[in-house]
Image (cartoon, rainbow, N blue to C red; front, side, top):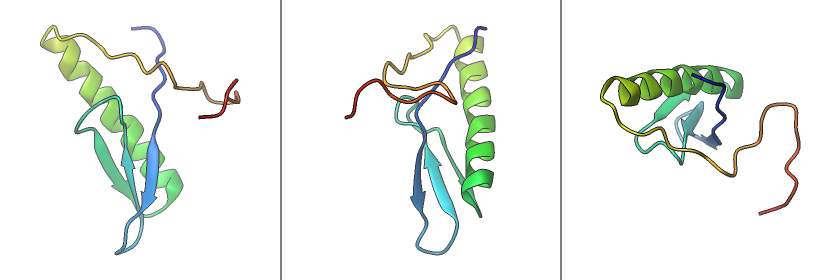
Length: 77
């Protein structure tokens, strides 16, 4: 599978840590005690989510607004 990029939304959890969601992949969520940990855990969740889609022959969604790491968006939303 070629490299894919997905937007990740981090929101502070009222009880501490951060919730991480992937808007393009419904139900793909994770949590971490820090932003870095939440990012790492949701990256793992994305890999599992995509593997499940592939295993079941479901299409892989494309996040047209995702920006690869190290690049800045060409436009502001």
